[in-house]
Length: 123
Image (tube, rainbow, N blue to C red; front, side, top):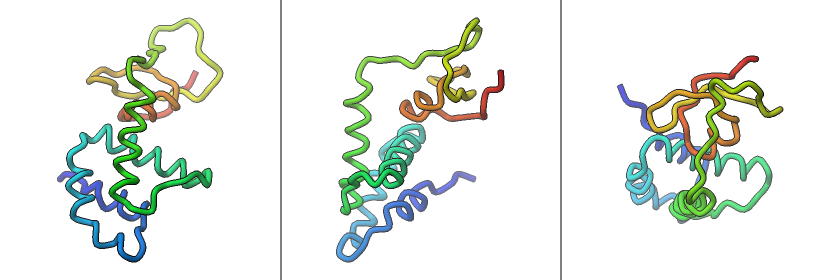
């Protein structure tokens, strides 16, 4: 059974007033993205909220702005797969799936690229 990920983003955004009426338009927009992009958008919004950064109160634009923002931040860069590396950066590492292949990535890159994180990597 597939999880309805829209309920999570809708609860995170918690729209108020007139923006509550945007639910169906937001659902259509959300479902137009693949699951990896949805995860990345969710994490970007959640992180902004936690940091007290601006998140558009209109949920449609909050989703759209963060989807566009990701594309602008990551136009040509590819994540570094540390699988088989002899040394590792001194940051949290995770096991994750990128383009259908498993590897070891920094948590920051895995989240930025919307990877499916399978667990923490222990040295």
